[in-house]
Image 1 (cartoon, rainbow, N blue to C red):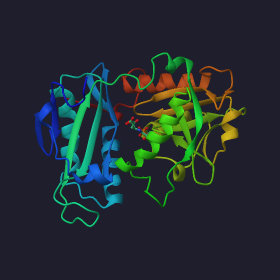
Image 2 (cartoon, rainbow, N blue to C red):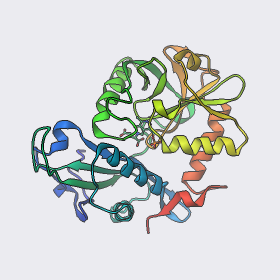
Image 3 (cartoon, protein in one colour):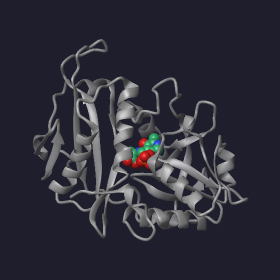
Image 4 (cartoon, helix red, strand yellow):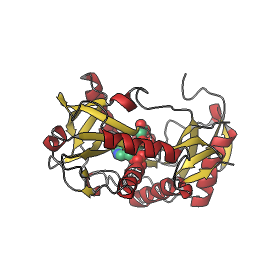
Length: 308
Ligand code: PPE
């Protein structure tokens, strides 16, 4: 079913509009040049009803992304927080993926366009697992991408910017075409960066967990969550440059991301990682993650915002 042809409402510049009417003109500036910012956020069903996971942090990252690109969001963060709660509630969703996005309008064309208006939308829909449900247990197969991840001085990749995702889509398509489920992009110096839409972690033989430094990847909120949980249970986490062969010989490897959640990696470039299935550290962190987002066990309550 087309994403444009659905029941429900979308928050568009301060109003809840019927889903099918949430339209914009073909000369929308961002459609042409990719200058826009967005977020991917999830709401989960918990004992206290539907809750949005780390809503505050996702909203703060959206504003940081806009600031990096020099875009002024014409709404206060509290308004966008409210908008995100509203779209889950008004669409009658309990578990949902939320997509806030800020883009330039059609007030001008060309790279020199001035006085472009910044528009904001927030949509929400049901979006179960990114990959097959079995993948959460069995793990996925990935390949190193022939595409380099953006250099930090090309598109400013600390911003979660629309245009950055051309690179992700090229890498992902290549990986899917070759029979894998996801790509691993290297940075311009050849060090491990991230997946097309995920951060990567490995567990080495000594039991220490490694993940690339933030210079080589998006400042993932799931990444931050997992680092915190690992340290809480006494595991050591080091952020450092990693090479692709360190991934080959890792005992365990997994991806993290809002859409992908905590996804074990069982094979990389045709090499089996560790035991070839979800490892015990991955499993433990994955369980902690799902308990957290669904408000079970010893979760951090401040990270869950009820939508009502
Ligand atoms: N790296 C990239 C490049 C990325 O896009 C994401 C999120 C992450 C890391 C993980 O960040 P976080 O979600 O804060 O843990 N990718 C979003 C978009 C995926 C999509 O298919 O669209 C997401 O997971 O929502």
